[in-house]
Amino acid sequence: MIDLEPKQGKLISVGRFFKDYPVFPAVLLGTLIIMGLLSIFWSPHHPVRGDLRDRHIPPAWQEGGEWKHPFGTDQQGRDVLTRIMHGARVSLTFATATMITGLGLGLLFGCLAGYYGGHIDEIIMRFVDLANALPFILAALVVVSIFGSSFLTLLVIISLFSWGGFARQIRGEILRIREMDYVALARVAGASPTRIIIKHLIPGIINTTIVVATLGTGGIILAESTLSFLGVGIPPPNPAWGSMVAQGREYIDSSWWIAVIPGLGIACTVLSLNFIGDWLRDKLDPMLRQQIN
Image 1 (tube, rainbow, N blue to C red):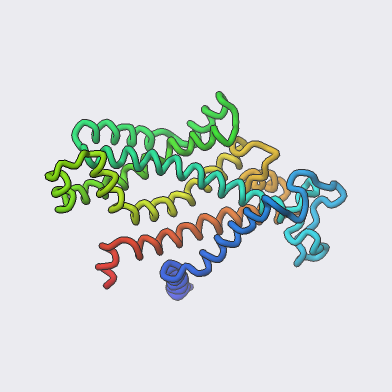
Image 2 (cartoon, rainbow, N blue to C red; image 1 turned 135 degrees about the vertical axis):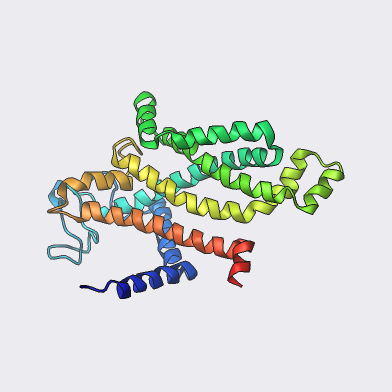
C-alpha cells in the first residue's frame, strides 16, 4: 500500500509557503500585467493575421520549434505568445472594469442594507438571494442570444451576478462597525446617514474591500474565460484566453500548446490572485492578526 501522507504534507507545506510569502504569485501576476500593457504598444507578431505556411509550429524548446515563435503557432499560423499577450490585456482590462462595476454596486447596496436594516435590508438581501439562485451560464447564454456578444454585454452580465456576493460581505462588516462607539457618537452629534456612511463606515471596511476585490477578480477572469470557451464571451477577432483554449482543443493530440498554454495563463492568473488575496486577508484583517499573534 502506497503511503500518500508524505506527499500530501509536502503539498500542504508548499501551499502554506505561497500563502505566507506570495512572492512568486506576485511576480507571475506582474509579468502577465506587463505583457498585457506591452501589447498595447508592441508585440512580436500580429495577433489576428497569421501565415498558413507557419501552422502548428511547436514551442521553441520542442523538436522542430524555433525562437521566432517561442510558444509555437496555432492552426492559422498565428503566434501563440502574441495572442497570450493580447489575451492578457483583454482579460485583465475586462476583469478590472467588471470588478469596479460589481464592487461599486456591492458597496452601495451593502452599505444601505447594513446601516438601515429593516425592510431595506430584507429587500436588498432577497435580490442577492435571487442573483445567487439563477444559473449563471444559462442566464448568460440567454442574454447573449438576445443582445449579442460584446464587451459591454459581458460586463453587465457578470457584474449583475457578482455584486450580490460583494454586498453580502460588505453588509456583514457594516453591521459590525455601525455598533461601535465612534459611529454612535457621530449619530448623537447629528451627522446625517450619508455622512456617517461616507466618513465613518466606508473607511472602516477599506481592508475588507481590498481583499474582496482581489479574490473576486480571479472569479471574474474565470467566468469570462468560461463564456469565451463556450463561444459567447469576448467576440472575435479579439484574442481571449477562453476562446484560444476552445479552438485548440481540436488539436490537443497533435498541437497541445495551442490549448495548454492559454489554459496555463488562466490558471496562473487566478491562482496568483487567490494567493495574494489570502495574504492580504491575513495581513489586513485585525481579527486574524490577533489570532496569529
